[in-house]
Image: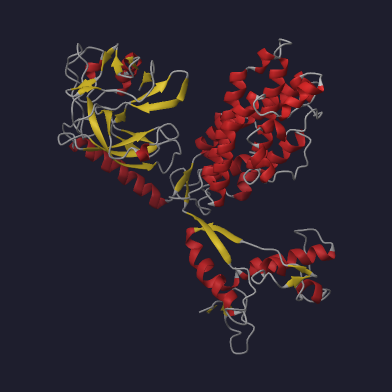
Length: 602
């Protein structure tokens, strides 16, 4: 049924039904078409977008041009048969992709398409542009609770503008938390971390240090061919030789695959993955800049050309990043392109950009003079966020207050009833009898990884179910290994677990143990799991010879027992995990890592 017995809504213009109105989800999607028609009509009449207009009232409209068979809006919404001409030309091919919340799926996948098909002459002669694909999201909550306008809880559109936080920072933070697979939560601290830690320290840092270095060292602009290769034409001809420009090839080899992955993620409408890949490209740029140390190369006349080639490659990556960012942060993209003296609309990711990403310096207009670069992002202070959090906390309803009091009372009652228990269990742990501050205080066991999923509220965390054997059972564990170890590919394998950590909440999910992993001391991103020897099974005890003693029932986090023991863990030249140089082992042999030597373990 497409009508409702209500007093508000568009009235049904049919005799006998004037007391009814159209059902909103029949009427509203048609607005997509009428809005497009209105936009083109305004353009035809020279009216600015967003201005008030009498278009549609039929008073001064050019009916044929605005709404006739060749009206411009039809090339978008009636591209179902693209052989039909519009204004003497073939209609363009149009793909209709829709984005919305999950509760609106039926209206856009059933009702609206049915309306379009029903208005056509026949199913075979349907001129309407039909939806190709749809991207829906789960729900977004606010600081662990629902958004509520009635309680002034949460940040809404006009509120976000009044905070003074740039729109692109909001766009980035919200899209990075886009609830694509499950509900996600907006937290002010996440916004701060993303602005200060990702946009400012990673992306903004790379763009600004690259453009500022070029401006300061190469006469207020980008390096020229002469800067890169020398004065002779023969030397400059090497710019076309891939093997001669090793810096360009090195950075391109790291970035080009990430750009391909980005394109694939965007085609699949996986926005969060797209943003992660932008940050991965920027991270590669920062690593490259730091490793090549252009400030050192510039000091020696013999290595100045190497400096110029390294900086040219970095500038090429800046252009790539500007194009990748545009769907998410259009204002930032426009700023970067303007600083690079490109048109602000030169953000297309076309074949030229994709092929050029393999040799980024070729995407740079060499010798271009630029103005002094501008900072893209500014840090958000903790004090400011505290103010925002208080401002938008809203008022607590009576129902919420009662629920909070009940939860508090239940927790107090539960604590009073609990007796005994171990790591991951209930109750207060017994005081340790072992006073040695060494590995014997840790209850190290073999665990079998049974299940892995991404943390619903934190992109960098995994949630796991790990079987620790019959005595200890299955534990829930949260690990910060996303982007370092592909745990989802490790399901069914065995690993080393500290089983007597005190349970703690990590972004709302309780972690009852800790997985041990080795990390490169010079690059923490290089991480490998510590694994027990072949033949190990869940629950097997792991020990270190020479360090006997009863492990704590539960480690006391206030006394930082693990933190004091951890620095003595490591790996040796045979990739064996050790404590103070002595192997971690089970009855079947030594615990090891795949390849990291001289690494830390935690």
